Image (cartoon, rainbow, N blue to C red; front, top):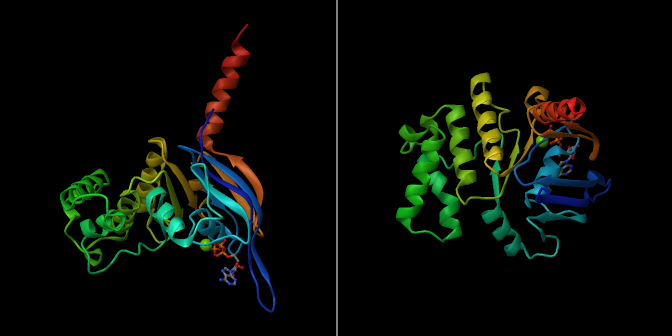
Length: 246
Ligand SMILES: Nc1ncnc2c1ncn2[C@@H]1O[C@H](COP(=O)(O)OP(=O)(O)OP(=O)(O)O)[C@@H](O)[C@H]1O
Ligand SMILES: [Mg+2]
């Protein structure tokens, strides 16, 4: 049976005020290890709000987020920060790289924050990650010396640096041209194929169809769930084999 990496149960997030506003309105979701899940939905439907809850960047008013079997709603802020640092990697629409740092130093930051590796090992891992994303020649450049696609790949390397089980990405290709979009999306696909769990918010239906599964959010709720192209093709092959048998 597939192992569940990330689970949301009865998630509700509301903003209390003169007029209270529900951003996430009762979401149950389970994402397997190695699964590539896309979240789509109209602007303002609650996709980012949901992703922030799943990534422990925000806390729900009701429900729980279970990361690799660990419920998180009762954790202290520092315990949540620890889960964020070690089990989760983040990629946003804008890269949020530190402008005065080189690519390598940006990639090393989460390793430094975790404080478990020697300087030499951090540099070695940082360089390996950059090389695996085609950025070997760009390790000592600063973000303003890189293209948008290159910056986003540095941000992905940074997200992977502490070997998190789960990557969450909010519109990671939203600010990129077509070629860079293709490259970044293929990298995310490969990360999932290598056994990590990837949850990506995207406006692009063609990209979303390449995920294993797509959940479509409307008004803070899961409106529909679709099986991705590849899973659908696999299912069709399995069905053919079954019907072909005597
Ligand atoms: N801190 C906040 N206070 C009040 N309302 C908020 C807050 N954050 C988000 N909202 C509202 O909650 C709703 C959901 O926002 P969210 O950012 O999750 O949407 P989204 O689906 O990511 O949209 P987009 O596709 O435009 O990024 C929107 O109506 C938004 O205006
Ligand atoms: Mg959003």
